[in-house]
Length: 158
Image (cartoon, rainbow, N blue to C red; front, side, top):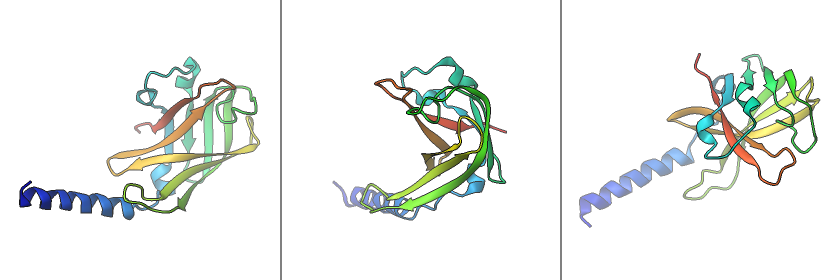
C-alpha cells in the first residue's frame, strides 16, 4: 500500500473518530415536529395498516398530541385500547456511557409522559440521529406476539 493511501486512511479514521467522539446531544428544537411511520424502516416486516395513519406532534412548548394511536402501540405489555387522540408532555434525555473506537457512548432518548389514554404512564425510546438526516424515533412493537416489529417514525416535511 502506498504512503498516500495510508495517509488517506488515517485521515478518514481521524475524522470519523472525532465525529463519533464529540457528537453533540440532540436538543428539543431539533426534535420538535410531527412524526409518522417511516415505511422504509420496516425491512420486510408487516405492521397493522392503521399504523400508517398514526402521527405524533412534539410541540416546542414540551407538550405532544398523538393521533390515531393503535392499540398497544406505546404500552404493548399492558394491553391498551386504540384511541383517536392522546396527550401529554415530552422531553429529550441524553446519557453518556463508556466509549470505544466504534461506539461513542452517547445516546439520546425521547421521554413521553401521557396525561390521557392510553396512559397515564411514561414511555421512553431511543432517538436515531446523524448529521446527514433528521432525527428518527425508534419503535419496537410487540402486541403480545412472539416476534416484534422494529421500525422508526420520521419527521414529516412542513
